[in-house]
Amino acid sequence: MNCLSGCRGRHTVINQNVAARINSKPCRTLQRTSFRSQAPPRLSSLPTSKAHQHHQARSKQRKLVRCQSSQLAGPGEWGQAADQNVVLVADIGGTNCRFVLWRLDLQSGNHEKLFSKIYPTKDYMTFDDALDALAGEDAFKIDTPGAAAFACAGPVLDNKCVMTNLEWIIDGQSLTVKYGIRMAVLNDFEACGYGVPALRPEDLLVLNDVPARRKGPKACMGPGTGLGQANLYWSENFGDYRVWPSEGAHASFAPRGWKQRALQTHVERQLGYCEVEHVCCGSGLQRIYEFLQTDEHCARPDLDLTVHKTAAEISKSAMDNSDQLAVEAVDLFLALIGAEAGHMGLRSLASGGIYICGGIMPKVHCRLNHSIQCCL
Image 1 (cartoon, rainbow, N blue to C red):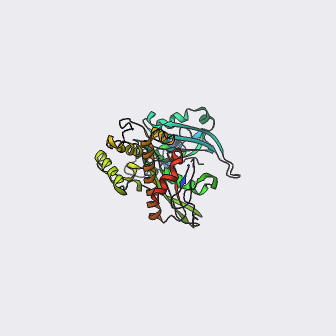
Image 2: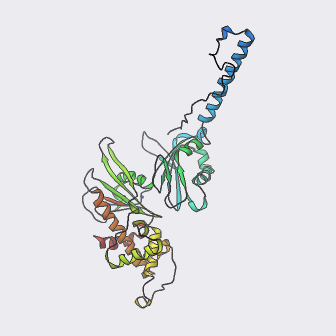
Image 3: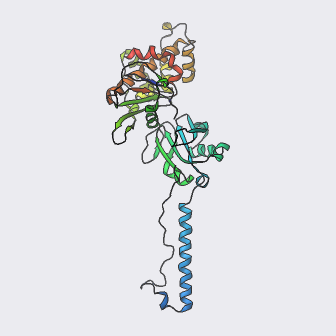
């Protein structure tokens, strides 16, 4: 996981072995057709030739069962070549799959990054297709992992994720059987949450510098293709924070003031309802920009109200100050992110800090202090 930056306080921001054993029960492949109504005779009671035939039949049965069991329990496509000290981790979002291979040294803690690559999700029909593309890389063939963990943008149940903003299903159990190594699936912001305690002061961009309570609850959120959220609570048994992912971003949007209420109405006309994620993610930034374009031309005579821009283009235009409408859109977007950060702090009593990560925030950090302070 790649943590980019972060901070403590009410509104805080951050930049971001095991071989599988497949258990199977040997099935009985021979039925007692000759001895249907009685127990099988002992070999000593059979004529020599029949005893020999019976012994051959039982021997074939044992070989068949062993053969079937080995086919079921043997390593998959990667199992035989797997290096148990190498792990594969991935951040799987609605836009990209980010794969990284690491060689672990649990004795010294000096882990080595072996390979990384980003695969756009639009180029692959299924996650298995993207995983097969990764397996074709030379670096992967040299250092085949012994285990994998996938952080996915969506709710996870029983090691399986049906992704929220992508028509992919990532099933850890099926992948374990297919590839022959253990594969774990977790929510993407659960993974981000476990990275928060590992952050150093130099990784953090502090917006509201207040003391953090030791072992106090923490909250983690971040806009990208969607809006991810998670809460961290200290566990004495675990000796560290445990992370609990949340789908709170799908709660209803609570606007402040006339402009945000008008934005809510604009989104409801498009989608039928307005949830937090609809205005606090990449596509949400686009909706805000398009909403501002609905203003009367007389109110903005010097602006081109017909141009269409992507979220990346809006962010860039705001940062270089070439589009005042983009500046206004980014400021409103960040104010909404700040408000939701405050909501998370209240819900979880996040006295340990609130951390905002994701791919968008580092690109607009120049506007952070101005925009988020508006909601304090």
